Length: 114
Length: 112
Image 1 (cartoon, rainbow over the protein chains, first blue to last red):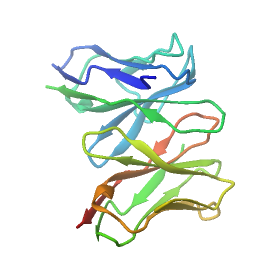
Image 2: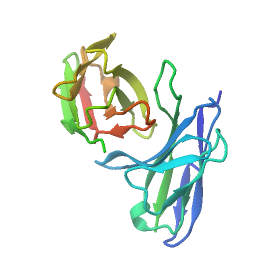
Image 3: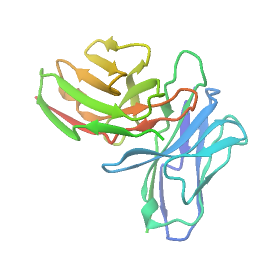
Image 4: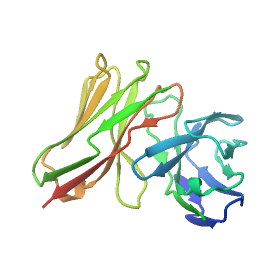
């Protein structure tokens, strides 16, 4: 299994540009989440999904959109990039119920907005 | 919503000493408390977790304790080694919600 994969690994955007960060998992996990990580701020939840067709906002959702059309994929869209969105973005997935609630993280996308 | 506070923000110890990191949470319905280790430039990885029906859990040099009444939980690392140097995050969740709330992180440095 590849686990959780994210593309791209690095991205530089200009203010106002839009883009989509890709996330995919091959573990048939129902739960998927997007976090951003800023120095001294820990990991903050942007959006999450408990299954295909179901998404909800996390702690810092403004400026981001998500959709979950399949169990495997959970893309994060930046509508109009701003310098405040410069961060490292992690996607994570976990089982629903079962013996383990462990969240498996992707390798991250480092985004710089100039 | 849930709020998780983590202390200290930095911790420096000598090799062989013990390290303790503490977290408090606000949502009394939270029932799952994982700890993640993140090395520089890498993704967070689970090192140990505990559920609300257990007071303590050990895995070799690592242990986690949970006090539900006081709403706090702690990570204990014994016989620290330089490779334990990393950022450690605590988190709390209601398992039915499928999302974690993280603490701010602790930078642990183990000096040889």
